[in-house]
Structures are given as C-alpha cells and as structure tokens.
Length: 269
Image (cartoon, rainbow, N blue to C red; front, side):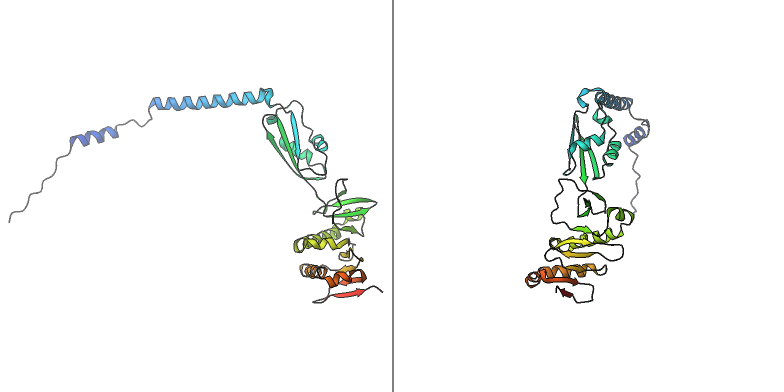
C-alpha cells in the first residue's frame, strides 16, 4: 500500500504583504489627529479662562442678598452682622471658611453651613443650641445637651423642660460634673420614655450627691442614684402610668429607687 505524500502549502504572498504593512505602520498617531486634540484642549482652556474672567468681573455675581435659615431664637440681623460680609465682593470671592468661623463666635450657634445661590445670593444656614433644661440663678439660663449654659432667649418656651436647681452658674462653670450627671439622666429619660419628663418639675444637684428628681404633682422627691439608671428610669416610668400611683402622688413625700428590686415609698405626715 502506497503512503500518501504530504504536501506543504505555499505561503500566500498577500498575507505576507499585509503582515509587512502592519508591522511597518509608524509608531506615532496621525499628525492630523494630534492637531485636532491640541485644538480641542486649547479651545476648552480658552472657554475656561473666559468663564473665570466673566465671573470675576461681571456685576451679575456681586453679592446682593443674604438669606439666613435654621434660626429660631437668634435674630437674622445678628447673624448677618456677625458674618461681617465684605461689601462689593462677588459671591465666589467671599471666604466661606472665615465667614463660618465668625458666625460660630455667637455662643448660641452650634453649627453653620454656607452656600451660594446664583447669581448673587449667599445662604447662611445655622444650627442653634436648644435647651434641654433651665437653671435659675437670679436670671433664667438655658442648658443645652452638651452642658453649655447661656441666658434664656425671650423666644425660648419653657415647655415641659425640667428646672435644674441647687448650684449657681459660677459653681457649675468651675465643676460641670453634677450638671453632666443631670443631663445624662435627662437623656436616658428621653430615650426610655419621653413622656416621663412631663411629671418631673425639678432636678436638684450638688457637689456631693447624685441628682434628685422632684415630681410635678405634690413635689415628691425621687432618689434615683447613678447606678442601673435605665432600669430605675423604666420602673419610675411604669409607676407614673399607674392610675393608683397618680391618685396618691400628692400624698407622697419620697420615692426611693436605689434599693435592689424594690421601691420604698414614704408618705407625708
């Protein structure tokens, strides 16, 4: 049996020419393409510079109006005055960081954000300090959640916020710990049962003892201590929701929650 001969195919000259043409292409892009890219970049840069020049020199962007938002107790005029905005400035030239720092020098301002509304309005948004309790020391002072003590503004309603008693403003400025303990108590009451504060008229503090609560009806003193506060606040919350407890609240002198698993109630004589 004869073996079949193997034939080697002849190379295609067209393929060789095509491979050669591909390998022989120049390594650089087409000069027309490069020129087009350069022209586009120059045009974009020119438009950018023209826009910047227009913004800096056009009277359209000169500051004409200042709006204040978020303020409830502070007058808008006081905030604008504190901002000390330069006259004749375009809104993109106003140093926003410096203006913010000046506004924050108002002790009633807790935070500030400044934005621009084209073409010529600047918006100052403030976050005010809000009272969580009040303190009476010849005058009425507000206390915010951070323990900052400030004079009460006329528009600040007393609401159902407790009154902190026992220590003067000067004493609390020297040692804030009693006040911080009282604020911790208020924060926990708000977290566990916000309605509980409606039954509390006063939080008495001093430098030696834990805060003491006084109830609205009858003025019963509540000993609550500093330990296991969530549990004790919950027990007090359940007590004030009981009709039988509310009916006799005015006859109670003291409610002691500092004992383990029991409540000691003392009646008035």
